[in-house]
Image (cartoon, rainbow, N blue to C red; front, side, top):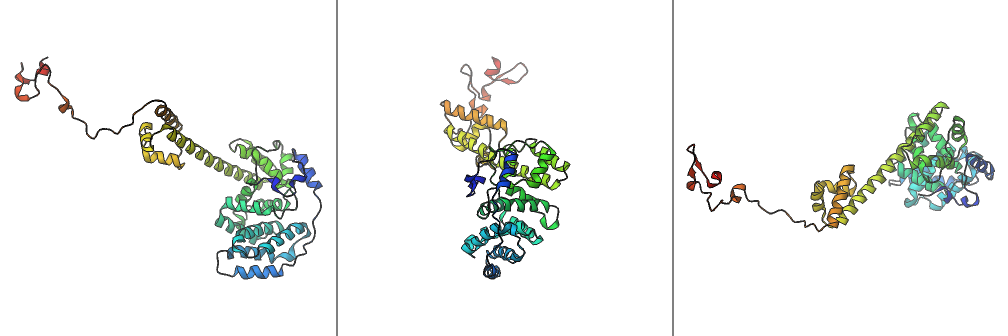
Length: 370
C-alpha cells in the first residue's frame, strides 16, 4: 500500500507535523493550473467505439467516454490534472489490460471535475463490479499520476463530493467509497495531534486535504475500537456536518474489519506453530487437545477462531508433547470384557456348576465366601 510520500514531488517538501504545517503547505503550493489544451475529440471517438464493442472491457470504456464527452465544461481549476489524465489515456488507449485503471481513474476525475449524477451511478457500478477495497486501491494508485502536488487536490475534491452527495438516491455507495479511499495510504504510526474542538474539526472538513485527513485517520487505523472515532463523529454532528461523521464511522468500521482479519490470521498462524512444534500429526494433536480433527482444521485455516481457553489448552498440549517422551499409540482394537477378565481366587473357579450353596439356599462362588 503506497504512502503519500510516493508522489513524485513529495520529497521536495518536509513532512508536516501539525495542522498549521498542512495549511502552510497548501497555501505555498505553486499555482500551476492552466486551461486544458489537449483536444480529446479523437480520444472520445476511439473510446466511444470501444464502449460499443461486445467485450468485458467495454463497461470501463463507457466510463471513459462519458467523462471525455464533458470536456467543454471543464474549468481552469483542474487544467493540470486533466492534461495529465488525457496523456495517460493517449498512452494506454483502449488496451484491455489497462481498461480497469482507465475506467476507475476517469470516474474519479469525473467526480472531481463535474460531480454529475451519472458519475455517482458509475461509481456504484464500479464498486459492485470490483468491490470497495479494490476500487479504492485502484483509485489511489492511478490518481498519483495526475495529481499536481503532494496534497492530492483532485482526490480531495472528489472525496468531498462523495461525502456531500450522501443521502442522494444515486449516491448510495458514495460514503463507503469515500471512507475506503480515505484509508488508502494511511500509516497507523504517522498521525497528527488529536482534533479536540469543533473549530478544529470544522477547519479539517472545510479546508483539509486528503493527506491531512489520512494522518488524522491514522489514529483510528491504529486502534479502531478507541473512542476517538466516536469523538470525531460527535463533533461532526455538533458542527452540522453529519455526512462527515458518517464517513468517519464507516472508516472506523472498515478498520475494525481489517483488524479482525489480521487477528484471525495471526491466531491461525499460532495454532499452526503449536501443531508443528508438538511433533505429532494433526489428528493426534486434536485428540490430545480434546477437539475433533475437522474442528482443528478450521482453526488452522483461519475459518474459525478458537476460544481463549482452547488456545491455552493447545499451548499446554504442544509443550507437553514437545518436552516429554509421550508415546502416541492407537488404542487396542478390542477391550476384554469384565467377565472375561475375572480370575479365580485361591485356586477357585468361576464355573457356576462348582459354586457351593449359601445360607439362603443360593449357590455362592468362592469369591463371595471370602
